[in-house]
Length: 310
Length: 310
Image 1: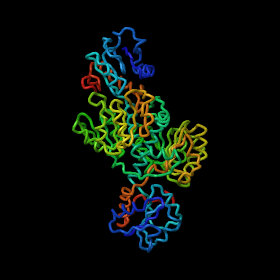
Image 2: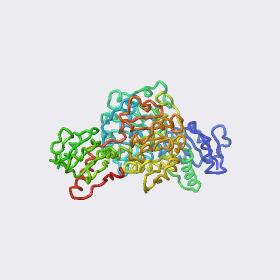
Image 3: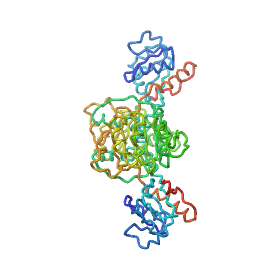
Image 4: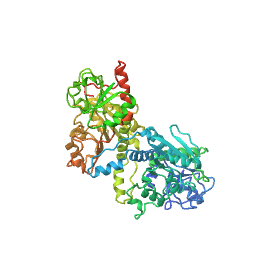
């Protein structure tokens, strides 16, 4: 069995080690230098392949994404037809994302930023503590990552809702869906977490209109994709005071350009796209399961619908 | 029914409102100004009463503590005999403490402090993400607060252990107990949370010897009492590098004195005893339940063993 690996964003050697631990004796060649006979590869492990590159490998049985989002696969608009594209589901990626979300939800609920600004300057002062059950948290996106984080936030007692394209039923989560559900969802959301896939329908979904639909003083956490947010609209809502604060892990251009106003905005916290990273040693378990399914002539799990875009 | 209220640390008017909502028509007098006939009071709601003051109220049926810790009650070494002392159990206090613990556990596990120092200075850089299941978190104290926090940290996938005076059995938590269990517990604990009651046996429990028993690079979160920590030993362990960092919410003297080295130590985060505060509107539910029990001639819940000190 032969794997080809193509990603500028991932550590190829860590993946080689993880894959060979699961598939002893397999081939693992890194694109482009190690690629020889393109017809010899069974599986492509990829992130952001050059458009049209994968279709030059004629015998691929599966394309395994290196990210939970699939925009880094579907950016190749000439994917080979008939080859299943498998979205990555990594236990560590899911757990890490929920940790990040919990951290910032607690941060805003308990006003940790205000406290830490005070104590950094030697000020000892307490604020009234409010009941967790009165705090309304909302998830834009209830996929693999959004639903895990929503469940864990709800388990702490927060009043949690979620919005998704189609209706979802998750115990303990109030569900909104579709175009009609968006404004009612936003109207009740005091802490908004963006965990949507990036599609043409969700690009720029955090904009002037949707920000205005949030209650005064809402906080925003974006750990999906930078293009979900219209930056100038968010900056205006922060400066105008309607939005209290934002934590942003993802940006239109990454690394965030040095002159971008987010870096120094007093109401913005920047994190360097670290909300959750794939851990090869755990992610490879999922790849192994899918390769076994494909080799057995079965359909792999979590395939991407190329037409829908997720 | 008449209540007397005595605390310099709590907001008397918020308590008056909460108590009168549960006991319409009851009396609620604030010590010392509103106290008239000492024989007329049924219940004392108190924190840090002057030594000997409560025994001058001859007809008390119950002493209701305003804190989860009881050191602020037992500091009155002349409590009236035969009057049950009830420890506060406040849903919001418990939930708030677990939020604080989760926040700092995630903070250290995901190295948020390092990331935020970087991004505050415009640096975009990622670190390798590690598996949550490999991170060993340890709770000194598995009481009402410690066990709730331990369960919630374990639910995220962390490898959680706890140490207590007597053996405890909590699903998913490795349990250590007694003098013999302390060093083995510390040896495996990478993030240590102190949530013990303050007694003569636990005063100064975080000291040179116990700090040395933690693995190199351990992090410490103290949200119990300042007197659990020998400050000079902790500072030495931080300066020597054996301990990576500490978040401290409680101190020998509060507010933390302006010249205390904790305020400016680069490895110490100070929070102003806000890890969790009592929320009168929820705490009063517990008081109501206990008053009803006492009025019905039954034993109240969560009474304090004055001799044991917790």
